Length: 288
Image 1 (tube, rainbow, N blue to C red):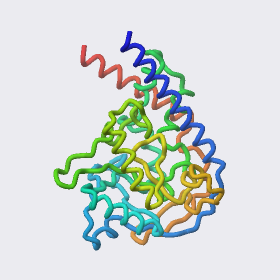
Image 2 (cartoon, rainbow, N blue to C red; image 1 turned 135 degrees about the horizontal axis):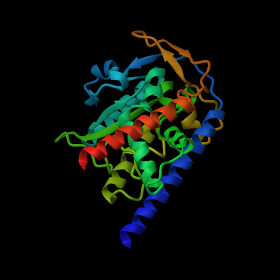
Image 3 (cartoon, one colour; image 1 turned 60 degrees about the horizontal axis):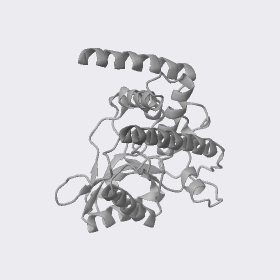
């Protein structure tokens, strides 16, 4: 009975948090943005001359693309301050992800390592029943930005991070490693240990001290001076960083004009759902 009660509580929490995130994304679609045109700077280059210890993920992005560790020029000094403060605390900031192109953002939602997990979580949420395409679309949009305007990685104003112990190189416990998608994912999840929650709060306080706010539904995501930041802090100010395309190697940006157009259509999500179901059935058959 206790296990059933706990499982039901986890399901209810997960569903409520995903609905919150979906509603948040709808609000961000309406939030005013005046793209400032500020270029981007390579985080790897910016860190190189400082003597500060920072790590960068060596995993390829979707479709084998290299990760683009770039942020807006106006955020670089604050990023360096965050990284230095972590070193002083015995930690090392590890950047898992930063700027994403249209292609990266579009296909991140459709990679098996994200889509299949989302579908499995939905089947769990629905007590084993097959969820509708509409519900899958809502959950995908809550966990992976569905349009350029609501994806602050496409604004060059967001980073996904892990934190390591400087002496051992082991990851600081936040409940699960990046990239977790479960009832443990929201920043305030009651299902992580007290130590993990304390670490989440300490990291968030350090990041906030230098202006970076957390996306409440992902414990690894921090951003600054974009629509998320101003909406969450209720500043009433127009966001200065919006969705852009970036050119290399100069970091020049150009605003994406159709920033509200969905990156994946209903038909594409339905197709991915069919493929994911086939993969999951094949996995189950292999284990029988």
